[in-house]
Image (tube, rainbow, N blue to C red; front, side, top):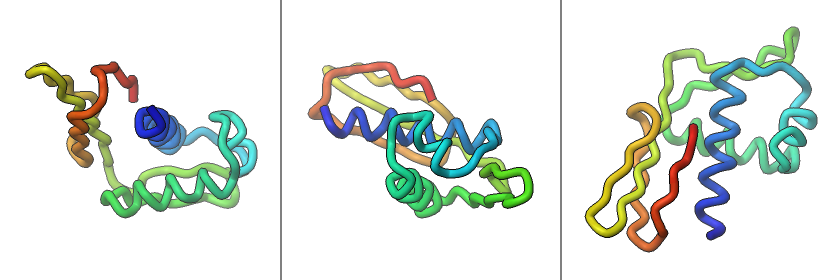
Length: 102
């Protein structure tokens, strides 16, 4: 279930950015149980998906320059769950259904 864990971490990074949680990158990463370099990799992944992310050095927080929503869809056994907004679509048919709160 490594992919599911990665999706949960991606959702946590998205939430940190969306809520403009402040703190140095090391502390933000630690708050969700990942390293600073992993945090940057997830930020880069969100940028690849179209999220315009900015970091304010003065207030020490990430934020979206434009509205960005994250959608993760998991479909199994003809059951479809959609969570989030409209910028990311994920459809792993090999996983058990699990609700992700993003």
